[in-house]
Image (tube, rainbow, N blue to C red; front, side, top):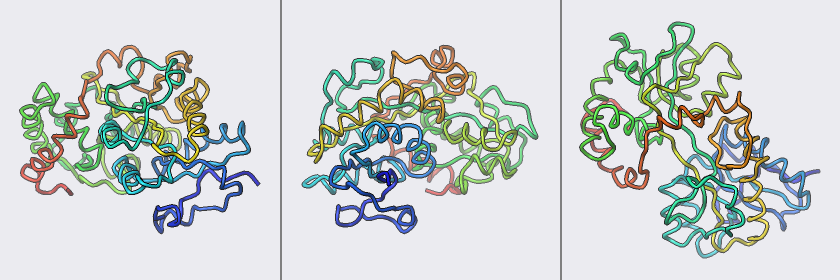
Length: 353
């Protein structure tokens, strides 16, 4: 039997598996040679496991990968902090603010230059140990059964005066990205003054919003007819299009999109640093990046790979969309998080914060 790729760590490794995740655990052989990979749970785990981690294990059958699925970078960072004296995780995914904190706290370490040579220059960030693994834009979502595709973010504000919109509120990362998008549209920037303009617009939008806390998510809510318009991450929306054709549409608006960046990191004090570097090299390789784009529609970082045109057109990484990208300083945005949350509480009392 092959080693599992979806095994939740037990308390003996210093991690508490949730009840929801415990039923996904399966016994694994060769645990003494296995790597522990802390990544995102849910759809990302299912797709990335199949597209990227399984080929690595096929090439290295002597090793297993324990996939510890967590909801967000905040939880991954908290796990690394708890384990600082005795790390159980070897490789971790972190967004830029969490990766910056992990670097400053000496929780992760830089990779050898040889592992980075095929990456685009934009995949490397000063003061952050790990390189980007992928980027993912916030996109405009709509119900193609009841309306044509809107071309602009302003389509949210120009929609009929009734509750037909679904948007996630902060602290959901998509809610933070939506706030920064509104700041760009209505405040012409991403500083505090721009956020004030964006929050004024979001407060105006609130009378058209059916929910600020979509359940189970915006993609399913729109596909099921519970909303007509929304904003969400590109990967789950594109996968929904494949699984439920005709029930969800995705638009990369004319004004451009904001993308989040997720980095891959070697944990300081990893028990198997050589194997961890080998896994990271695979994740950044041409083959793995092409598989990621083809199945998950995430923005790649390997500059030497040649990607399928059909898959790339469903990302923000076409030349035209890249030229319209809305730049964001995610480190500065993270510093503004308390201010943004306060402005949401003041401006949108109905939002779940």
